[in-house]
Image 1: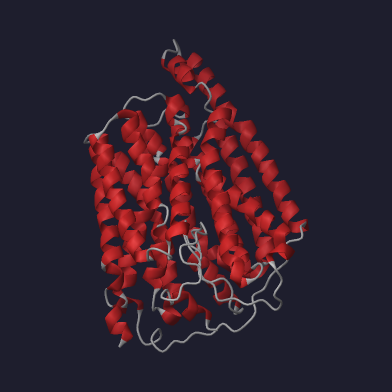
Image 2 (image 1 turned 30 degrees about the vertical axis):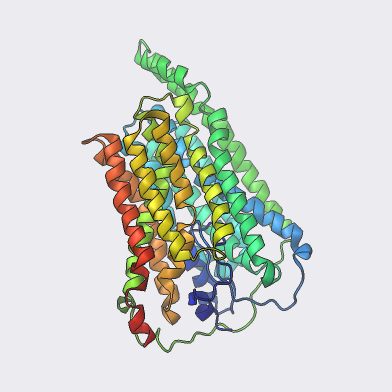
Length: 480
């Protein structure tokens, strides 16, 4: 079976609506493309879905691989935990380094730019190391980043601390690029959807738990500490309090770094098989080689759509604490708001699994999700306090299944250009760094609720357009 043709053929979905939670579809495909190896995992998305046209030499059952599946589930939990720490970290660095919102939001910018720069290099690394060693290497890199971040925060040097976050993101990038195709081809094809769903749940649960754990270990009694810092009679007294705050992060991150190293060693010594896809990696390039990417307008519209989607997702997850602080809500409350968005995303994810494609198509569900996004964003604007924050958290439900719909619609019909088109889509993840920065700059000049609304509503309206019509632009010409 021609793997790229099967991947691009979204009219014959293999795992419609199944979420795989990755940022590295292009890198995954590039791994097999660079290595010249044969058909493996098809497509894995940022918070998204997977298509696969893979056959293994043997056909064991999932029971054969229950140990490896559990190990990979732990890895999905690990990178989900780190990804969704950015929200409470914004609150932490604002206080610890006395930052305004613009500088505090360099936290998600540093993290998401690491994906932008390192996803495809990660694929080249995996070509040399293989998947199993690549997973361990990703964990080691994350451990180095965690130690660097902890040390720089303790020393109260902000920009080097951001470098630590960038390194953590690089490790997550490598880890995800390895584990996503791995779980797709681990075990029989007819049960891959269940494996992917299990991984998505591990990732979402980690995202919901992370802010609570961070809040308990680092931000406990943050309101009282903030009041003491503001009322400190001398600079020396204030520095002593800030040293106490920043010191709270050192031990947890060092312990986590040690655990990451232990998990990396465990993975290397574990029963995880070094799976290599089998079959032929050929492409029906009748259309792909004859046309450049510029002749696929639905792809370029999809790149814009994905850029905006990742932006609104990060806004709902990482900026919600800052949004709540705009109402004067206590820090002890706002530090947990990211978890509420992730819980809503988990609910939306489960709803999508139940509804797609049995009751509704992906593109129709995308349109409905966009309408919900507009409604929730307007609801956040016309209400105040905890109610308004609740509407922002509800955006997690609206966002949950957007990537799984956008990605396959954008790459449909690309043929041999699929990996290049996918690379463009992966680069669009930088929206998670850019859109929140636009928000914190804009809210310096207008009301923060208005700033949130004027950014979010147009983004969702564009996503609505793409779900209804944009994904079909130019498709008729390609069918001729």
